[in-house]
Amino acid sequence: MSLQEELSLNEKSRELKAEFNQIIEGYGEGLWAYCRYLTGSPWDGEDLYQETMIKAYGSFYQRWHPTNPKSYLYRVATTTWIDHCRREKRKVGALEEEHLPDEEQPSDNLEVEEALQHLVDLFKPRQTAVFLLSEVFSFTAKEVAGMVRTTPGAVYAVVRRMREKLQKTPIELSKRASANGTATHPVIQKYLKALNEGNVEGVLALYSDSVHNEAALGFQEFSTDENRTGSMKFGLPGFRAEERMLWDRPVIVVFYDGENGPEIHDIQYQEVENNQIVFHRSFYFRKEFLIAAGEELGIPVQRVKPVVNWEND
Image (cartoon, rainbow, N blue to C red; front, side, top):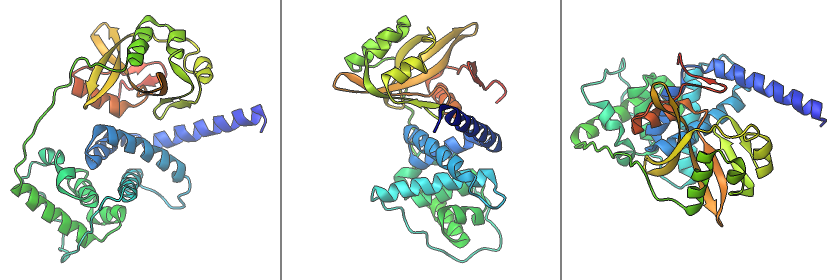
């Protein structure tokens, strides 16, 4: 393939991606929350969200029939997570059917928001998916049945039994405050110093030659040279960066100090092996993740930054 053909293919891919983003616009926040509660972890939920978006984009144009974007996204997320659980040899749970009522039963006064924190501990993956889809995201029993590959009668029965169990199970809410600092690998300390100094070569010197640099759902680079001529071609942003604990994981938070005080510009984490950074992930493009992280850390997110504008979202 010639360079011109490759550039043309890349341009077509960007056009399709832009079209897909328009089609699914408005569903990201709810989908991210679904992935978070389905997996029981913001980090696992973010991984599931990213995989869902990649799969959904890749298979959307194979659909021959009119497709409800919201149902489609949640279906992809659900089947992806259940398949993950099966590969890990986890019991995903059977869904037994009961008599199908004439109409859907209204929710009672159970505090659903409190229950969300405990679903993964109390129920199997398919049961958790059914409850979230039905009770939190308001899909019909028929829609839920299609997503988890069961029958509407089983959906009604599962939700009823789960609500009964949740009402009988004491719920204790506990919020763990995020620490302002954490001791990490010496290489990460050097990376943080170079980042704060805007020292591109200092950062690159800490990377392995075949480092995987990923801006989630944005771009990927697979070597130091690609970093140098790609994402770091025009230098570093020159913003302040600090270590923080986020959902029990040490991360680097990059701050933009604007007129209204500090805002989260980016969140990053790295993996170190043999005293070199072998994997670097940035959440620069991940609106739903950054907003949830900002709420956890008590810091607003920078909503307008290069190639990103979330001001009206």
